[in-house]
Length: 323
Image 1 (tube, rainbow, N blue to C red):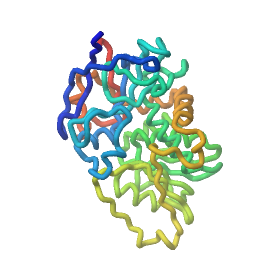
Image 2 (cartoon, rainbow, N blue to C red; image 1 turned 135 degrees about the horizontal axis):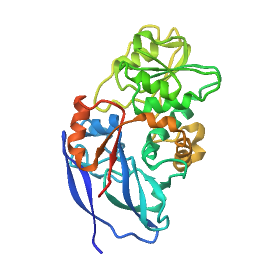
Image 3 (cartoon, rainbow, N blue to C red; image 1 turned 30 degrees about the vertical axis):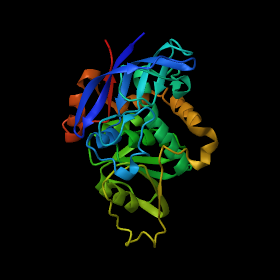
Image 4 (cartoon, one colour; image 1 turned 135 degrees about the vertical axis):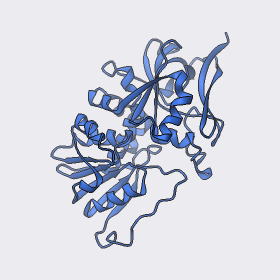
């Protein structure tokens, strides 16, 4: 049997297209997945789409089932949910770190079963919530902490949602876009514009991917406070005022990146971390992170509109109905 599918490819920086694919015959330990939904990870995927992955990061930035090489042509993406048509998990709804494609064959070990209390349409956020879980494992927030999350994108909002559950913590989402106030309210945290944000924070999580945001994150810290940096800047240099009060206030700036499980929970491994993220997605508050939808066939026109700012919002959910 010849198995065919369609996939979204970045043909060249700034231009995408839908291409036909031949998918492999499944082996004994493989599954064939028919995609129901995928998600566009706004920050990373728009950076890839504009060709902004630095040459020295090409290997580290590869997605698990990526084809091609940066800058292009490349098939990229990692937020896919579908139904297993063949294989050990036949009939189950699963999440996979796979590019945007109508059907695909992968090892069964590469998919995570979506719990029955998590809607398939919400499960596309599993990769984002997994990043947020890793950030909290790195940050280790304490009861009663004053915490700011600077940057109300997908990752920042997911982090804020999890931090809202820390007992006694005062959590504020900080973003230059006043429309993020509605998302903050849905997540159960306060909202502030950068100039109005509350200072004296024990912990600040930064996810705006801007130098201005990171500078403001440092300004919001109390003495001995820590910024956990989640942003990935690609090929853009970042300038910070580390010659001001950074040393006298004994501030800390540390990185967190989902490619490595936080050392405090390394024993859980990647699969254990994903299991935690899946359980957390039973919380309907995460629906606030999905702010738009499109059809699979529209992807070549949607990503340029996201880069230009014509299509604002957080996560765009891609529908595969009828494919």
